[in-house]
Length: 155
Image (cartoon, rainbow, N blue to C red):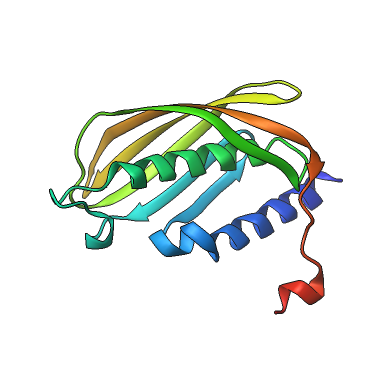
């Protein structure tokens, strides 16, 4: 696969992720999938809060995990199966308003295991504050996920 074909496939992956599942439910938006870097954002709103009126930690974890997944997708063959097998997060500050942005990078990749890290930032006006740091280990499978055909995409 050429670099252009790979870039086109990653753009299709990004569009698909933005349109389905947990990303759509939470309002997450995948911004970047390239060269071992993933970036995912979400607007803070009442739907993300727990009773203390701060963003639920599970939302922040999901955002960081998704950003790490995007970073990994960018360096493995399109359609390769992978999954988070371990993750540790440190919450640094509560979030009540603004936008959350998770930025992830690939630290190390082997044949079947990869290690990634992410920082989640709270953007409020001109302020950018780190609110969580996460490190994760991912399993990289040898089998492929079936890619949708043109007839499946139009359903």
